[in-house]
Length: 143
Image (cartoon, rainbow, N blue to C red):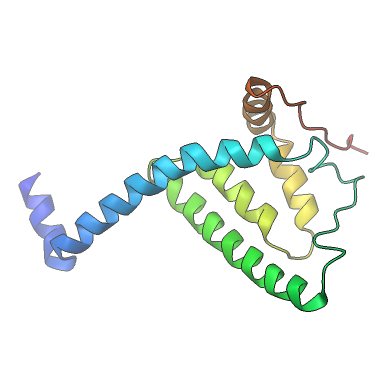
């Protein structure tokens, strides 16, 4: 083990390794708190393709533009953090789902529906929602 640590320290300084470890622990704890809160607060029909979504519809166009830029930046951060959590401690798939939900790109709704439509992920989300007395997510039936 000492040999592996010495090899890693040749490439990466110790203070960077310590910083990465602290960031990983903070990210893990934050994901344990934030992800359930976000998923519980979503409307039950949020991932239903039949329900239109209008984000900041009645706000000033400049405010919508700034909000859209911030929302997409936060979405990218969540998605990348979720990708890292596939290999590090954390709720990787749920974090990636939140990131995808925040970003705007073509065919996003279909990707969300496919991700949430996975029985395991949908079961985890609905169990979480049930603990907070929220209705289960509804999805559009397959054509």
